[in-house]
Image (tube, rainbow, N blue to C red; front, top):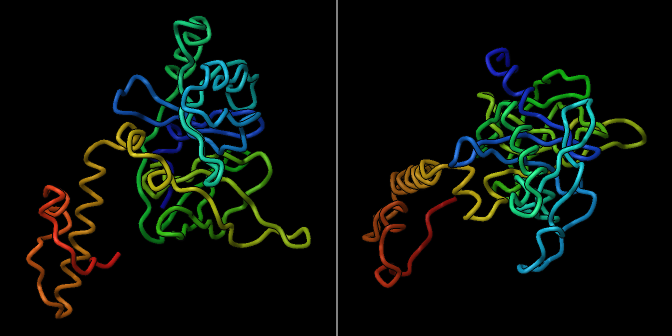
Length: 258
């Protein structure tokens, strides 16, 4: 499948983050996108403290256009050094209003993409250093937390680049490449998936409420397949129905297949 129908918008959403890249994605407030990137693209990690100062989470001259100067300041609102995923947003407009205004103007001049979950092997696209979208396949591992790129050529400088599904939606970011004896591996494991690695408060911003409905619907279908194989029907209802029950009404019992 050709990426022609989304290539212009997708390319315009990719930005430089330090020595790597990032991608602008929509939030529940359309005019306020955020940047997804690999955590190791940050110059340093913010302090592990819920009461850290804003300036400790703010990075000056971090963002910029691809191939251009990095002169845009951003604040890190989430980072997971294990998954290698970070989310950047506009800096504090009261503390540094000029930098916040520059960030807002920078993202307003570019397009933003949507986030989606990757639940099974499928087609994908990655942006090469030459600015060409390369087709590959993606396998899902670790219960959906990591992606494996099959047939993609990942190189230094591509960290933080978006991994797009066949419809141009962001399912992950490039984190690692693999070489053996100077020869590039055919499969690159350990790329972080977006939906499975961000916390619920952030997921509700990046993935609208309909995203949760998709997950519950998939669980419902898996449960029905389980029952059709001859398993005794439970009185507890489908996963969607149980998710809406008060906790005290949920009875213990066998879990549906994943």
